[in-house]
Length: 121
Length: 109
Image (tube, rainbow over all chains, first blue to last red; front, side):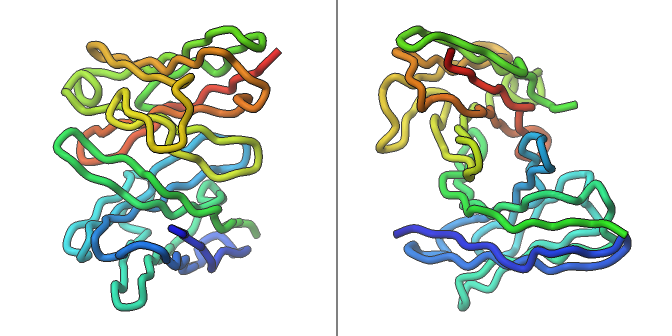
């Protein structure tokens, strides 16, 4: 069964750091790009960051650029999101998702259930 | 303010047909990038519903269909069922970013 399981969420003070992980199983991890997508409480989906199959290409939403870093370890079938300088507006449920790229864009065909990040003093 | 614009809510009675619009611009949908749709049932993760404007992944009923024209796209649901009550999101590509619509809450009356 294709599965993505996130972990690492929690409560952190403004200005603090957190590292999220996503464990992939049921598919050949290094055949795919991956993304992080977040959903603030009661709000819609927001793409946060994406990475290609070997980590050689990454992208970030303007709202997190310079503060968040996406990475992956293909030997461990794992995706990560290092979040620094956290703000209250980063409070959300963070999903990892499998990215599919083709000539006319990207879409996400497998999603994890998410891990919750709360930034509060 | 989302890059792609969706109506906040739509509703329909069981058995009816509803459509959800997704309006973009010349830098995303109008630039030739495809539109994809996701369904999010209450308390669950999003699920891919339509990819590449009009393609259904395996297991998605043919009651769901998608189309694209110009700078807009639409999701149509026919034979509405109670279990279709969910949030629906469109998604495309713009300036090296994946972009989502703000989401549409579908209520089955």
